[in-house]
Every structure is written in structure tokens, then in C-alpha cells.
Length: 345
Image (cartoon, rainbow, N blue to C red; front, side):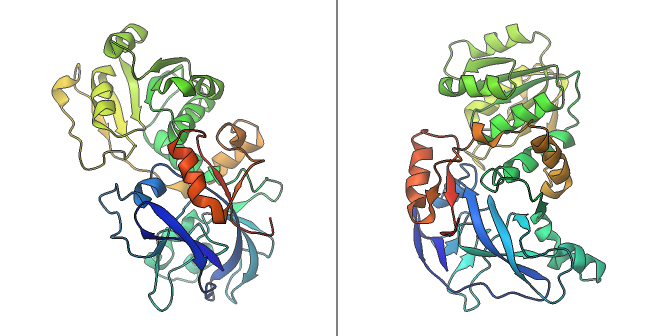
């Protein structure tokens, strides 16, 4: 099969590798589509994460969707033809390359974690595979790579305890920030103000933002204070830079909550609590994709999450052109790029 492998920082190499070996609880999947992720995949490619690999060969990509084409002898919950989220290629058995989620490949493996749990297999062998969830058969697989981002952000938002009577501020205008906006709107939040790139204003309003500020606006702190004089109940930093953190702190209300989700300058930022107007809660509750899978399915069925606002479903990049897809994201020509992983699709 073909796979996009990070062999040196800066770009991916698409080359032939061995097909995955399938264990008794595994489902072999043809990978159909994936999406670029500016948060983790792009940062890994560019070596801008504290845990970035040292140019060791690895298959990256985690926003992938596969279709089951074969199942192991102990699989009970997947059937041939099922669509499955977060499928990835495993590492090479000879150690020639690793897998950092492994989503940018033609074939991947989904684990029947439900059966493993029922059979008493230790959780450490299947816990991370709970991201493999079955997608309704009627869903367009081109839209379903978005489910990764949507599940992560919905889990994070609900763990923060966001309520309809909250005033929420979201800093950022990328795919993650737009997902937070859409979820907050779907949860009926009272107001959703956004600080982001001027070019993303219209799409942010379309997915549910109440007000939108350019992050380059002069006197941004004063603008936000005028928008919400008592401060925002919840502030989500979807960028993770020092600048965005510094914007967050004066904007949060007394007793409000701040969550830093973005990773742009992960490990390089500081939180100066003296910049806040009063005591606040710093959220560190993380997320769990599996816990929000069904809720995301419900929102998609109801038309409350529309992938076309994030992805151009009609113009996917073939796997061989994955570097061009990331270049388009770097140039901000698109929010996220769709990758066609299988030549058959």
C-alpha cells in the first residue's frame, strides 16, 4: 500500500510500504478520506511540538475514515462495509517506520475494543482504540473526517460545563475554533464572541458567532470589555500562543473559566494571573472523543454540523499530492484540506 511518511521535517514522502497485519480483534479497512490538521499533524511535520519526532520515519494523520474490508476471527462488532472513524496504519513489524496515528495511508486497522473489553482483555491493550467508532451507513464519507475535530472539541466544551446562560469568548478562527463556535451555538449558549483572522469573519458568523473581532484590532482589550463588561464566563483559547493567552486573561469574568486548547506555542507560554481581573478557574480536563461520538452523529443528522463549511468535499487532494494540501493550508487558502486516500474512491 501507499502511505505518507514523515522522513524529514518539512514535508511528507508518499511511498510503498507493507500492508497491515490484522490480529484476531482487528478489522482491516480501506482508508477513504482524511483531513489535514493544523494543530497536530502540521506541527509534527514542521517539528514544532515538544514531542515532535526526530525525523524518524513515521506515518502521520489522525482525521481518517475507513471502510471495513475484512475482519479478524474474534471481531463481533464490525461488519464488512462499515464506515469507521480514526482508522490508521500500524507501525512496520520490522521496525522500519513507526505510526503517529497512521491515518495518511491506503489501508488501516480498526480495533474491536468492545469485544476485547467483553473478553476481559486488559484496558491498556484497547483503551486507545475507542476512537474507532462506527459511522451511520448513510453518511457521506467525505464529510466524516471532520468527526475527529468535532468530537474532541465537543467533549472539551461539555467537560468545561458550558451552559446556555453563559457568555463565551473563543480566540482563534481555524478549524478547531470554528468547531467550538458551532458547538456552543448548538448547545444554545447566550453569546459567542470571537477573536480571529479578518478573513474568517463570515464563516464564523455562519457557524454561530454572535460578534467577531480582528485579532489585529487596536485596543482589543477595550473592545472585549465593552462587548461583555462583566467578563466572559468561559474563554477558550484555540490558538495557544502567548498573545492569545494574554488576550484571554483580562476577558474572563470573576470565577469564570479559561481553557487553552491550542498548541501553537505549547511549552513556551506562561500564564500571568495578575493580568486577570479576578480569580478564575484554569480548565485542564482534556477530552475523550468516544464520549461525544453519538452526540456529533445527532448534530450531523440534524444538519447542525455542515462539513462543507470546513472542507471542499468536491475537490479532495489525492494522497500523492498531500504536501500541496498542507501548502494550501499554510497559505490559508482553505480552513482544512480533504485528502482522498484510496484510489478506488
